[in-house]
Length: 214
Length: 214
DNA sequence: TTCGAAACACTAACCGTTAGTGCTATTGTC
DNA sequence: GACAATAGCACTAACGGTTAGTGTTTCGAA
Image (cartoon, rainbow over all chains, first blue to last red; front, side, top):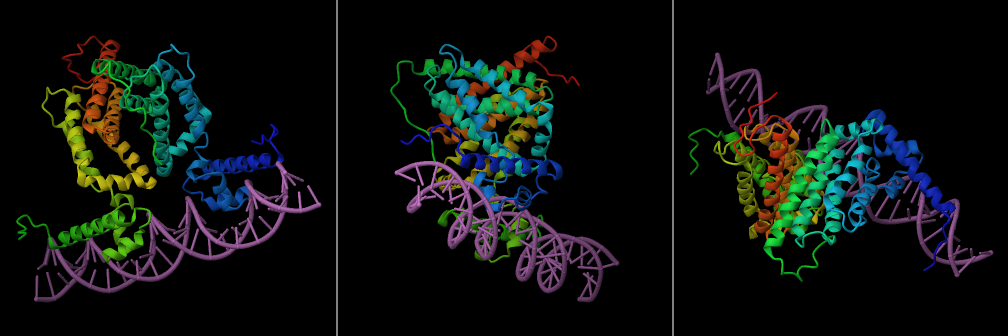
């Protein structure tokens, strides 16, 4: 494989600059006039690029707003896969969720969330995004040695954790709400461990596969 | 024949017939050629109505597929609000969810879900729909006398219950998966009751009467 | 230097969706 | 029975997101 050294390369820098310019312009216009009131054509014109260029960098109009999408997803799965071997799962999830939540509840992030609340298209996009996050997280949890062998329980906990984030974000006191939801998740996880050990402790070598579609 | 004892009204019958014809035609075309491959204009032409008429009956293209939407929502909230006074909440939810799940896992419903899985637009729509259901359910649970006073816990359980449905539907053995998820939900609910009783005044977790507290 | 790939632009279209307008049939009322 | 009000429906035209097709430029690698 040819390793293109480390230097960013003039071209990639230009590309990144274009992308950033589009994202900045879009966000500014959205915050100024509202998401639904600003069209892609306006964004493109204001950023001085063609409409097709916008879609070359962002998969959809909504993706212009949810740009840190993957970052969120990666931090969450990383918190599971890269924790100390004997660290319990749930507290690790709770801590990372709390950190991510902090980022989203700063005052400077408030207008952004207000924007999202104000557009049904954005709200809809967010839910789907969270579901994707839950699926990634489920994969990470299932692969974890400390998890029960039951895939359903793992997927369940992943969903619950994502729910915790979005429930807490909507609450008056996000961190307190997060605490509460995670107490419930902890209890749920314990229950899953219990029933899986009763159920078939000596049984294994099953269902290694399973996952992924499209 | 149809004897309109309580006058359905000729007009309303025609309206319902048109609606049904549109829904049937759309579903048939979708199943034949795929959701994304069939446009609204084709559906309208095949049903022999105008495009605007389609949207007069259905809010969106996706709504043509998720037609029983409200029925689902109503049954779920009804299971909470209309249960016997001393019936515990979670089993009631579990039972109704199981019944709804049975409807969705029959063989005749399989092609429909296959259709949904095959279109990202439909999957996205479904997630948003489920969120709406969770919100309705949360309202019902919050209003329930047996619930903890804490709104966060109620909203959490509502989400978890909706998650249970969709997680179970995707599982190999839906009913078994539902059992498992609901064991976890039950544990979570108990934990919520516990912490809310510690938190506030001293009340029993078993036979508490929520009383309202402002 | 030269070649190929990638970024970008531009046009033109498709698709879902929504006014705007008006016709027609049904309904409740006189 | 006649009448006005209403609601269903059709039709055209458009808007906004998105994509295909077609070039053109520009950089990176051989």
